[in-house]
Image (tube, rainbow, N blue to C red; front, side, top):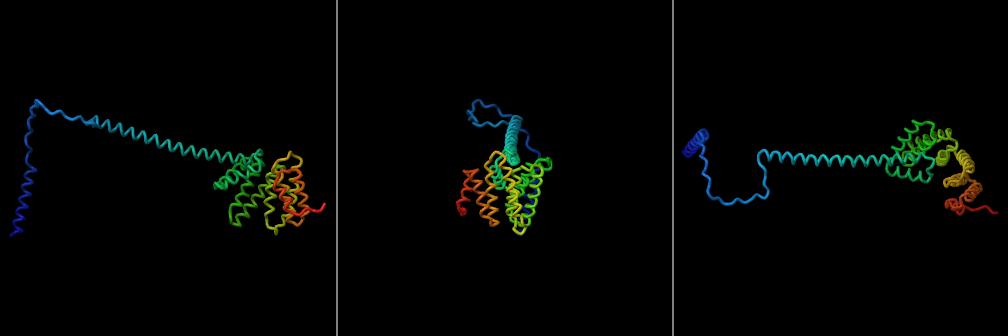
Length: 276
């Protein structure tokens, strides 16, 4: 009985609601008479425009916001592009210095260290390979490419890859010396690289001959600081082969020409000198 009452009540409620929703609305109310006195309205501190004015205001704000964003994004892109351009310019400057005959040996070593520390040896190799291909008659480009292979060889651990790079460097140094037999970088680096080859390859005498040739060439030119290294390395090679007397003679000759070279002084101090 209670369920029947609830059902009837629910049905009557739905019928009444449908009738209310379908009946016509009340007639419009007549306009109210203007009041003779009214309380002063409080001013709106932040008036918001309505209607078309509001739409225009919102549109203007949107345009301003978009213009600000559009200015910020290009600025960031320009900054990024500028950084890349500066990095590329520094890299190209480094490569130019490596192939220049005006750059000293120690300066080149410092540049190679910077490239190695920055992880850009592969980029340097690719750029020098491109330059060598574009100008195959440039001994300086060939010598720098050989140095790049040699630097990469010392930066990896794979023995097979080291051997491949060492052979590539040696070949490129030969190309540079065929173009310019007086290219100091190519002859020195070729001999210095061979001095580290396994003894089983019997390169010891070739290393000695290369340094002797380099010293002969040096002594016909104005002295340069890096020339002292040829005397150091030739003496080292004589010492390695057991000819300590020859080693001392070479170091003494170098010390006479380069009295300020601390490494030559150290060689003469650390090894016993022949009796006068």
